[in-house]
Length: 333
Length: 279
Image 1 (cartoon, chains in turn yellow, blue):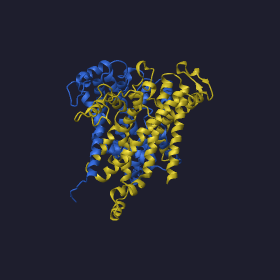
Image 2: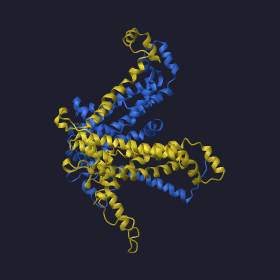
Image 3: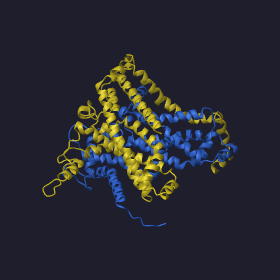
Image 4: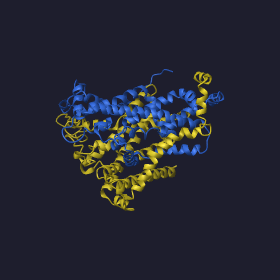
């Protein structure tokens, strides 16, 4: 406040005011929000519309803007009948499901436990679980690549030691744990590894979402239930779960949107661009997601038209899955 | 109300599960730091090291051999993150202030447009970003990274929430009565009072920019202009993988985030989830 007072008294304040006469109470809000809209128009909307245009053309960017050729729906029919696109979609859904479902199955009980059992340590534990969410995906995926490497990776060492553990000449854990090193790069394992890392990264995020929903449930509901003799488990199933439904809907929607566009984790975990920078997705392209397919089409094959078609098809698929999830939740309630 | 809680076996199991889970969450970070201090032969021995060694400097030297521009890359990352943060603090608070305190036509519609841009999946912007930056001639330029992110929808939302709840309208009216112009009111009355929200938004923006991989991947083509994640990715590829150096580089990339997180984890978590919860 004192700054304002001083300003009013200095003679220099008058010219400042007159210079900004165009900034009235009516125009000011539009001026103040304009940076967002200008930036969005230039870097968001215009390019997006341009990719729609591009998806109906054949274009190799090295030929310049003049090299575009109108091809109608050819890019779309090509992508829709392309086995590699089908495979990348299959991989995407596989990973989305195998990493997504356990995320929620772990996050809901964890949030319930944190909410009911911990008070002083709650924030610290939430912080630990949330940490993976804020760290560099690339850095941590590289570390996971090391932990999962075949001959010396820590995860194989741990697993095989459990598997080779002997009691009286028998290996009691041998049927659960491997006795030999697993080649995690094998196409059969790639998606499991990616799913694990994605699960690891987003469990904390989902836990925080559910925890915030739990904190809005009034305490007297539980008190009333326990007076009526409901056990903790009954309280969980009959009070907590129904009241969590709106949050489940939101969190699952976010998981669908996020998991169907996975790029960074699978990209790094499958070795990036591979030797020579020409392959993507690891052996047999077992870890190639749809977003990676789009990237490869544009930046390895230099076919921006087809890549734009892949991008919009994937966008449509995500929109459809979100819509289906919306429908499913509405019908059940 | 101090009372002893006696745990039954089921609760013990629950505590154990949560503790093991926390170890799984922290493990990769721990081993990243441990491996960063060991030579490649140590890391590739069975069993691998589980405690810190003394090879950190040697690993950084290997890293610099493989990535001669690593310090430069670190500089680019810091530069882009700091400019992005500064621009966001200014533009988002200005827009948030307008949405929070002014009445104007199409206000609700415009705000809905802002929020709906949060739903646009980032991968959809990958090809367009390449195109527009080529068009502008901004390939390999830091501005190709900070300008598109200079005003985030989440930031506008956070600032609007904070300003509408924390700044009394009477204060703004009083300033206007005193002859304070529209921008001066923002600059001298509103801005000094937005500290906590600015802190949260600043940290979130810094982290987002620091971790950004997709945009640099398609606009930064010269090794010299790589950001840190991009530089680390370049270590992958043919030949003997220098795990010690990779872990050292990853540690350097993650360290600023850990510091921020330890100082302000609650604020960060609240700010990051606010957009999802109320938007």
